[in-house]
Every structure is written in C-alpha cells, then in structure tokens.
Amino acid sequence: MSRSISEVMRPGVISVPKSLTLAEVTRRLVEEEVHALFVSDDDGAVIGVISDIDLLAGEWLFTDEGSLNVMRAITAAELMSTPVSSVEISEPLEGVAKRMRREDIHRLLVTDHSQPVGVVSVSDIVGALGAQKVVRRTVREVMSSVIVTCRLETLLRAVARGMSERHSRSVVVVDAKGAPRGIITGSDLLEFAGDGKIEGVTAADVMHDPVTISPDDNLRAAANMMIRQHRHRLLVVDPGDPGATPLGLISTSDIMHEMAQPGSAWQT
Image (cartoon, rainbow, N blue to C red; front, side, top):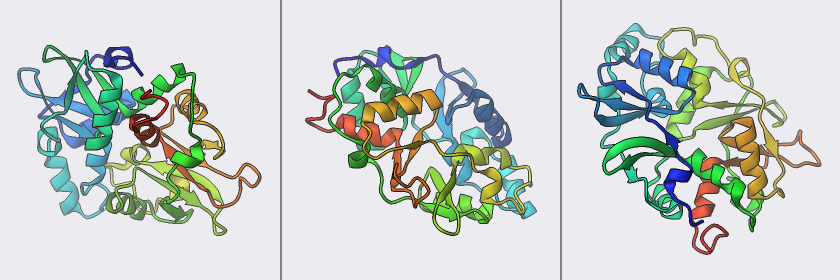
C-alpha cells in the first residue's frame, strides 16, 4: 500500500480546552460523533487526548452522590492521556498501520513540520481498503471468535463494568437461547454519563441492531460495510442459521492488524 497518511487522514483537529468538565466532554463526543477529542492548553497547543473509554473507566455509572461529585469536578486535563501520539503527514500508510498495531493506538495526531493538521484513526486506515484490488483473507480468518455477551435483562451498570474489566469496546446482547438480539458499544453509554438516569436501565433498553456479515465474506466486503453503515464492528453469523449464537466479531482494528502483517495483500 504505497500511500501516505495525507491521502486517508481527516483534516483538522477537534480539540477542547483543558478546563472543560467531563460532562461537557461527553456532550462534545456525542455532538461531533467521534470516539476521542484532543485537549489543548491555554495557548491552543495540543497536550493530551481523552476518549469515550476513558470516561467509562470513571465513576459516572455509579449512583452514589460521592462518586458523581468527584467525577463532576474532574476536568479534561486530569483524565486525558498524555503525551499525544503523533505522526508526520509524509509517513507511508503501511508503516503507520504497523506502528498502531504494535503500540495498540487507535488514533494519531497528524502533523506537518510539528504543526497539527489532522487525525488518522483505525477507521480511516480501514477505509483505504476500498481501493485495494486484491484481498487474500476472509472474515473467518481475521475475526475475534471470543466475544463478550450479556442477556437482554442485564443491568446497564453491569454491562459498563464488564466492558471496563474486560477492556472490551462492545458487548453482544443475546436472548435466553444465545441468539443475537443487539449490540452495545462504549458510545451508546455516553448519554448516561453523569445524569443519574442509569438506575433500572437494561441492555435491551440501550442496544441497537447489529450489522451482520458472513464468515466467508472477504475483508474488502467487511470494510465497505463498515464504511457504508458507519460501524466500527460487525457481528459474524452463520448465514444458514443467523439466529444461532454468533460466530464472532470483526472490528476495524482486526482488519488493520491484518493489513500490517508481513506478506499481507497490503504489504506486497
């Protein structure tokens, strides 16, 4: 894949001041429809990044007043990750994909002679698959076969705790027979941050319909579906029995990892 970051990055940097409260950060994440925001200092320089997963790791989803008061007082500067990982705009795409896989990075600040000019994420790199003419792997070979699941009646607080403990960005909701009924992602939980409305809410109340794909489809088909449906992950099901227990999940990260493998279609 002899392409540069400049061809796939999103120009411009969405940032928030370091003094912004976490409740305001949550609102900005939802409004901008992104998974992370960069944090800037008083001079406008980028000094950190804060993501939806960072917010879920806090005490927002507990109902006791003490925990909520602590979280309400925290600012973006106190919860952000720093330093910010960045890449120069001239870097070749395949090298950046390898680095993101090696360092487990979901997004990079793109700079031009050290000046921020854009952002490149796992999803952006996956989008580059659309231009590839050769795909050697199938969904079955790349997907994650072990998935985190919960029942329809599982309380949302328990779902959030499970996602945090298992470092999972999604949970598949199944019925009593194991049939997939929906999926919940970190972004779906953001509306409950800090408002005290989580009490009694179940997985069934929040889940959205999963976008499914066959294990025998190729990675280009998976990437195209992710782009078309604006989803970071697809539920892999048996096309002959879509109501059976899911076979696995394939995410933008799974596809990127394959792209970075030596000898893959995108490295030759």
